Length: 412
Image 1 (cartoon, rainbow, N blue to C red):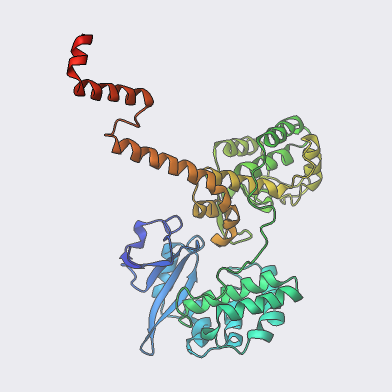
Image 2 (cartoon, rainbow, N blue to C red):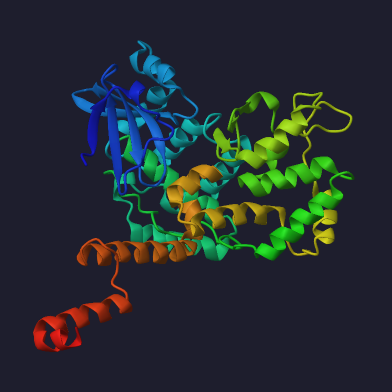
């Protein structure tokens, strides 16, 4: 498959189009030639604007297509005035740009769009305390994987902010690739661990799920909001804040389209049982929120007290609400659903966040390999399926009869 193609972008769904197996692929728009959709195997989809400045090709990142519709992206690509992305990226055109030069522009590009205010504050602190003192004077293009690995070990030994520091540096390197300061695919942070996997990738026993569901049935009349919320968490794999903060006008047929979440705009896909729960609540709803507070037109923010009662009723004292999200993902991966699809279902910004479930795909891979070998076996034997022992006996008898016709005649 070619790495760059030209296509009318209105003929595809940029949010769900298949990602490349490795590296990245660029789809250039035939209607607005300067606009392109960049697809990465890591799971990201991004609008990009190509242009020419001082005789060289420039590339400016607009944002995620789930947040910026195609029509808006085309308008930005054809605007006479420079977009915010192009304005903030101007200082990055120098090939000798240093980390200290690029970080302010990188952080400004994601302020108010990609990251929440609290996340940006953590990234700024990690930059000031860990990245700039050690790497600030290094040229972005010269930073090596070995150098980053040593730096990460040092930060890990001194601070609990190693994860956010590494994530910030990794984002900075990707941003530098987007603006021509490093070759594509040379992020020196790739492969270094950003977070511990913890409880990720654990299937809850079927008996535990049955006990939990039975406890929800028994407590439904006493605490209907909390029971419905827990059911939706289990059925969708969504985060607690995403379910509790859900508004009715964000639910569109089989999905809930969130303007904001931990990782930005995303979609929660609703299966039939989940839609049944929501339909029942909608019939008696009196506010704009699916789970409103009792006295205010605001969403519920916590169900900790109710969850303690629910898990006690189910005799699952060690179970966390977030474990329901892990269970949803584990069931998906264990049943052969591609990790990139699971990442979209969970709203992960990067595929790396989903890789903690990869080991659960082993069972599905073994089953698939067995099915493939079965198909091959049947095709090699003439398409009639694998030869069973009884068939082999009949075959040997026929061969014996052909070899000894007199014996067969005497039997007749």
